[in-house]
Length: 62
Image (cartoon, rainbow, N blue to C red; front, top):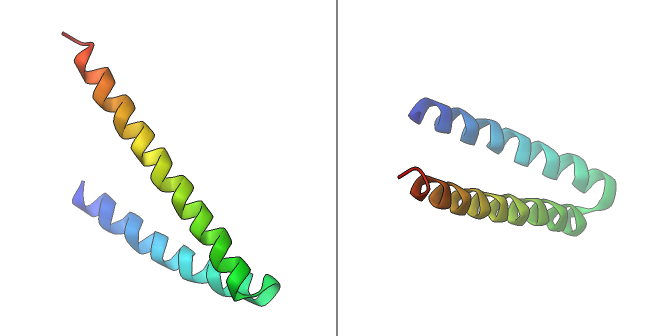
């Protein structure tokens, strides 16, 4: 499990910096940073929702 998390954060770091650079060249730094921040916020919301669903699901198995 730890290896999967390490790989995911490494890949995420590469994708984040690449996307920031490419989008900055195309639409400017402020807009590109805003788009990436929005994606990050959506990712956090999805993680919270999924964690809540997992918590509700484990109680119904009794």
